[in-house]
Each structure stands twice: as structure tokens, then as C-alpha cells.
Image (tube, rainbow, N blue to C red; front, side, top):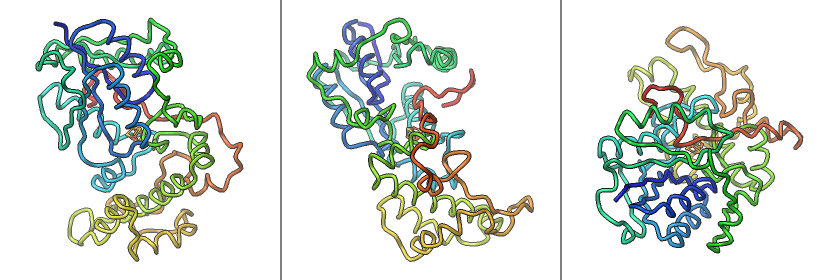
Length: 326
Ligand code: SF4
């Protein structure tokens, strides 16, 4: 029996692919890599899809969220370098499917629908990219085919009406689409997004926007702090790690974190220096998710700004070239 693995992100495109593959028959598995930073309603959606399509779902996670990863790596992911999609989605999937490495968290849902245990051998991998993203096809193929997998992109050839499918299966569409987000990733917080996307987050879910804005400020200061040679080479203890990790994990604000946030206006200007880095350059530039402005600056701009600059993550499919990106 043919093995099929659907890279299931919790978005509508991957749902359409899941339904398409189900109708092909075979031993099909929905594969979801959890960033642990998703919208509550995404989890409702993926379980509902697994239940109603009667397909088993394998959930894997590295066990940390994107902000926790950024603290560990001392690096602010941004719309040019999405370390979170690479480490928490693509690498988790690649390590497992290519090398059998099981990540920190593994969960099955509806495993009784699995038709036989060996679902990886000679599997065909299905991705939810459409003809508008056809330029991604080559790198994705190159990345997986050399490891013996076949790769298919049903939405390049087939236009599937997802609204009709949702109706047929009586599944409620993920609420982020109703909030006018272009995708259902990371609760509208995708660090690879553009200003239109973040402005939408501010308008539709101000609490989440403010939390993200505060994380950006604190992470930026932490990355700047860690650039100092004495911290980098370990001669001086990293006195911020614990507070910053706690903050991005629980929202708990220690006195240090409160202080950073209380002077955020001052910190957001590049006037403030943080000493010199190992190359002797002044450490003055705040780090931001978007290349040209911080969320702090964006919050103050009129709503109309760059509403068309949506951006966002292409998790699972962000292979840059024919090299081993994952
Ligand atoms: S959706 Fe965005 S924030 Fe989430 S893992 Fe992907 S790149 Fe990172």
C-alpha cells in the first residue's frame, strides 16, 4: 500500500491537500510540526480535520517556541532570516523523516486510522503550495527527492474550493482567516510578516500585538547585550538570560525586564550605544522583525501604512536553494 505524508500546517491549503490525498487512498498521515506558539483555534481545526477526514495525525515538536529559540540562539528571527521555521518545523520534519530522529515531543491523534506502521518508507510527500508559489517547487523537490521521497504539489494543478470542502465536512474555518490574516500560522505573530500583517494584528488582537511588541523590545536588547565580547566569549556571566527566557516563556516581568520596557522609547532610538562588538563596531542598532521598523514604531503609525505589505511565513517550504536548508 502506498505511503502518503501530508505536510499539514493547519492552514486551508494544506487542508485541501489532505482531503485530496485522502481520496487517493493508501496509507496517509497528516504531519504537523508544532511551534507551541500557535493560535488556540488552530489546534481545534487540526484535530477536527483529522477526526472528520478520518486520517491519523502525527504531531512533532522540538519543545520550544520561536521566542525561546531566539533567546537560546541569541538571535532575533526576522523577515529575512526565519530561524524558527527552519529549526522548529523544517529541521524537526527532516530529522525524523530522513534520519528517524524523534523530537522532544511526539503525539499521535487518531492513530487507529493508520493502515500500517511503516508509513515513511517510499512515501510521497504532499505540500500545499499553489501555482502562485510554483517557484518554490524546485528547491522543495531537490531537498526531498535525493533522500528517496517522491514529492507532489496537488494545488499547482488543481484549484480546490476550500469553502466548499469546509461546508461538506462541517468544519469551521480557522478564525485567523475571519480576522483577515492571509495564513493561520503562529497566532498572527509570524516574525517574517510585513507591516500590513502586523497592523492587522494590532487592530484585531491588540493584546497579542502588545505582547509581541514587548518581546521584540526585550529580545532586541538581549541580542545587543550578548554582542559584547566579554559575554560572547564567556568571560562575563550572562546576567540577562534567565530573566529574558522566563519573560518569553511565561510573560513574567522581572525588575530587569520592567526596566527595559520602561525605557523602550529611548532604546528604540539608535542613539543609545551598548559598547562595541568583537569587530570594534558600536552596538547601537535595535533589532527588529521587519527590516525597516520596529513594532513599537509601527504602533504609532496611521492604520493605512503599508497595508499591502503582508509577508509571512512559508514554514515547511522555505527552502532557499538546492542545498540542504533544513
Ligand atoms: S510562522 Fe513565522 S513565527 Fe511561526 S515558525 Fe514560521 S517563521 Fe517562525
